[in-house]
Length: 578
Image 1: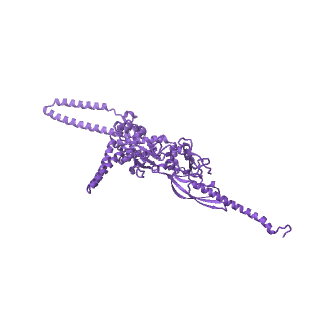
Image 2: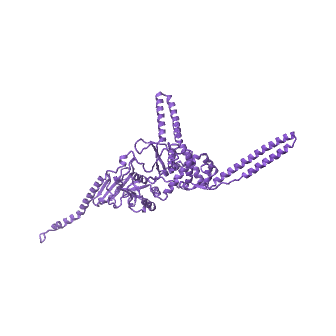
Image 3: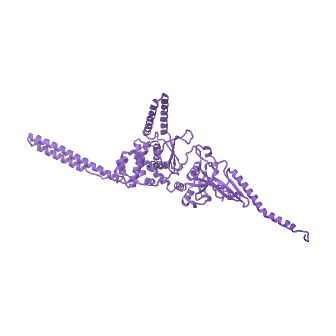
């Protein structure tokens, strides 16, 4: 015992125990803080309806979170109508979850592990989505593209500043789709979305983006539309008759069923001709064609056969149709952003390729409306001299015959008559030979005549078609092209003839000029050529209107970035995510 009554044990107790407690306090604090953060994180995940695995290290104050990563796509516009046109009831409040604003079709593609210390460090993984589907969905809801943002994205790419707007609200005041930070984007374009239910200005009755409505030509195409309908009916009737004959060999009930099926087929064909057709145009051309109006919900959709219009390597039918449909669907209000008309077709539409002399030979243009291109022949004097010479020779021969004896005179008359007949035949052959040479020369000169712009050629062809009652006189070029596209969907033979003519035309344009065989092909299918000029003229108008505009910038951006990451928000758009 020490002098003051304190032992060594007492000293160790008074000093060592507090020091030991102080040493344990950080561990206790870390445990409490970690558990508190973990609790907050779990509440955040529950409120956001997220399923996640969590692990905590109380000693090192680290929380691990395994969140699923998704690939998403918009819901079906018609099968999921209520969810498609409304916002999500439980959007995520976690930074990076801006994509949960909408209802999506999701597919888990992996897990994302995060190591955090505090709840506000949690980030919801971005989702992967096709860029064109995202833009299409926002356009369908009523979003408006921002021309400056798309131009900046096209020129700078991933260097585009964070917060740059690509899509605006329908009133143009708020940002709907913006460039987001590249965190967790793995080199992909990173985007953030924001939307309000009050911004949805469209519904299922509107035509979706990338779709075009082709009007029926019935009543606008002279007598051709009705004849086309009748030919379709007869063709389908022959098929139905064959089925009916086969059924009659079995039972009378089956025969009655076949007869009813025949009537159904006829009604279907008639409806196809008289109803509008709606077509979806994607990056790869025509996707589907429906009849009748699916978008107003009044009738059930019917899918049409379109294999003859799909883009294939060996045939150009699909490219011509998609290009023409894109041109037809392009306007100041509705632009088919998705499909890009090939550069060679755009270049072809701008060329001066049709010689004006050929149009004169075809009877489409009067020669007085063209610059001088053919040789002028002044052979009236030569014909008069030849006629005078023949009369003089005949008069002299007859005077000589009058001085002959009767027997000699008779023989001379026969010789003169035979000679005059041979002379007339010789003159006729010379005249026919000369006329043929001049026709051949005129045809060659026509092929070498000045070439006209497609739009000028189309205007003359339109007048020619209307003068022959092939199309209504009050129709414009764009309206007729819409009717032509309608017929291309339902008439494979017409499509083949029209696209074959377009291929022939483009071939001579690429080769430097029209040849005699090309002229003969046009002459044999003059009506088809006249309609082809209207189609190319519409493409030319569209190419001029879109050059260097928003549509070109948007198409190029969609081509460069097929898949994007969606989720992260920039600072100040609704969360404090970094």
